[in-house]
Image 1: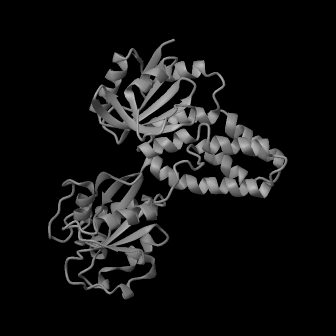
Image 2: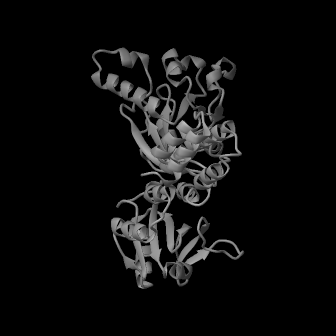
Image 3: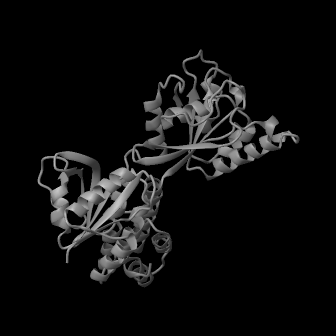
Length: 392
């Protein structure tokens, strides 16, 4: 055999790309071009995740995460810039690696690994869809540790472990999975609030470029604008919506205005997080009941913008559902570090351990939901066996 490699992610610019390397010479080639971080000895073994850089002689190409997914199988998680991906692929080819398509390589790997567990197979298929390096690491950890390890423990101790303990642990994995999902596939944050509170300015500030049209004219944003930014382990899609306005929504002659209001509501209802932007220099009258009803029950961070101006908002008069607040000035980019920390906390990723056992496919989620409601150990054993070795 030799060594083979393929780009497992789709073409185009993305936050992250995954390059799979496989073969009896793969490890030697990886060690030749990979410089691990830290001074301690490192070993490429199944389940091991390493952070470091890909180097071509004295030239550093990119910071990467490398995971050993099994015998002779490695995944390189690099940044998604097509130029970087191409440079790594060319470097691999210069080291004697044969370049294949993703389908060709996956077929070769699965043909060689005849007894690959279902979770491992799902990890190989899902990793290319991860939006961040952290998401790749979470998925890779489930192959020989994480979910695989926990399921194997359940099955091994099925006669000794209580059903209630299994159900509780399954429920905990499902809860952790909701947070992991945001890291793996990305997080949608709706920037919403009354008109002219600085929503577009905030989006531009976080995105680091002029994306939304910013003026001092009320209601400038008539449609939604989106941009992506990296906040901790999250790839966040920021969506700047048209400000919710009762008069605009009710105006029969303004068809465009009514449509923009409806779109804002749809975005709000589908968002993982809500950044409610208020003008700190105005009174609490800027809030309306319609807006409060739409955000009730969601994950809401109240962003008190324009803190560079004299305060006009009495926090004591703000409803309790808006109690999670942060003061910023998007115009002068002050308080942004506190804002991003609050976003991480709101999403639940601030202290999330990337080695946590989670499910990352609908199949796994469905089986765990059944397991947390199981009534007999026989049924539990059947579900766990299906989790480990079922059909994808």
